[in-house]
Image 1: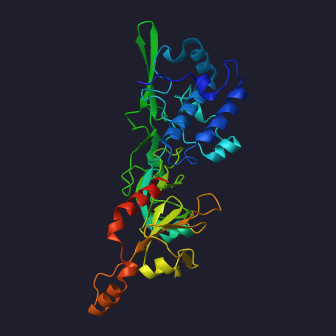
Image 2: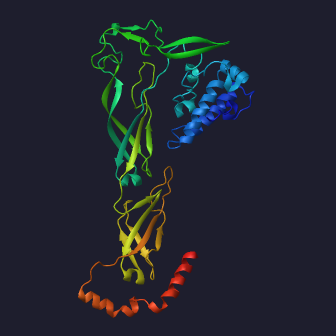
Image 3: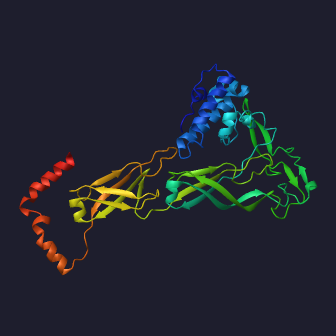
Length: 379
């Protein structure tokens, strides 16, 4: 099991850092590793959670004092409960505007208050034409999502007077137990069994949602796909997921995973487009210019030089896909292929045979040409 890093090292601060120093360091690192800025980076997500945990401890005076005394091996259980630290949903707007202040109080000294819950995250896969990788698009999907029940307005009761505060947890949704372990006292916090963590009891449950306050509903979601997008990219729609179980909770997030359809002739390598171009012998020998339609709306002009060989590659810069987040574009890489006819008429065979001295090869000098070709590859 990997040993936890020192919280001060995680935030890059000294042990006598002020509260302002702690907040400043947290804000900077949280922006750097935020999942919205690093959607496909599992290591960044891990560091974001690590930075959150360090800030949660060091920004709380009592927990910081315990940590300074005992380190990670302090008496009792984890201050975050049996499951350990699970992270907190903080938006980039919160980090820039300071809205995260006090958000970690749910862990310390606030077990007497209600837990702020989050709804379920959802994942949808969305397939788009290859053209979207060039142009981007404004798109829309229809999803089934757990939302606040319309019939009871999320109360879970047919009659608003049928909802009362759970007496077992006094509306907090959680109960706390203190247990003695030798000379130490261990605190454990869990969902209230009487109200299943909701903090309320319902005498007349809503028939539409069975007293849950939430029901499956159809919802249309509009979103923007940026140019240069690739298959596997996940767009995060904050708070478009499932509704939370508690009134003061926040909805989960919706993740839309993009799948790009294949193009009839282009293969993709990041922002570069690769294709094979079949041409005749005369095109290679004498050179030519070929125009083909392109996905940026302007024909692609391919200039083949005289004496070109099958397998030669022509690069057309700046005509590939956009680089995400940039105005630059990749290249189109064209590999020349010799287009040999599958069947020849008798007349065509005679005409080719009459040119065999020009088109054919000297078998007597084949070994020398093989050596020359090998030298070209090495160089």
